[in-house]
Length: 303
Image (cartoon, rainbow, N blue to C red; front, side):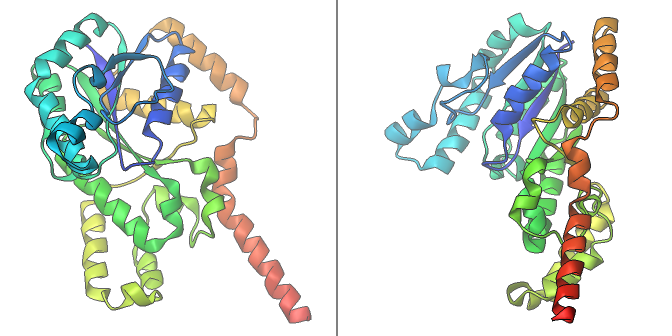
């Protein structure tokens, strides 16, 4: 019974970097991993690619011969893959004893309302008995803008409902989050998606969003009513963060690791004890900003 992850999300969210990092991370545990590139526009792969969709079709060829743009070309490629699923099955057959990581294209509509990606993964699940988890990446810099954060909440919710797989939402590049500006709330507010009424207050302070008050309230209400969306902070270069994501993925798709992998994981966790991880620094970002603001206010009062 093959197990694996399908890695999806908007362009630039770090999907390919995640695939390379997670493959390398899992191999340190002794897990045999195969990475499958299903992004027909990805021509610079940083990982060892066991199956490459470019052997079947590429966006450049589609754009050249069918006069389609990049978005239309990607949709055509996914539809072509769906119709040629036997090609993918044949390529995957020798890899069934490995843990599979599927690197999908970065086009939002493929996961929110287009059916080809969903049909491909559903066929692998129902017909071929694959055990898959959807790993949905969004860039953490969206947290610094309330409007953009509401947008990724809705995108994440739509993707969860459309793809119909066990699902994980990750805030990628979390180690860089403080470089994108001041956060209005602590990081836990964004990962756990706490009371969004506070977010509405900030939206009302924006002249662009203020005139859409009722729409903002309705959108936030949809997210809160479902109570399905939450995020896990991800830093590909941080082993504690990667370990957390790995454990969540294994729990979601039911993967059970062997004793050798368990011993390796215990050793890694013991080495991690007492270390100052970037994730801990991420949690302190709001406090840092608060301290800086308080100091600025004190200086202003003194002057």
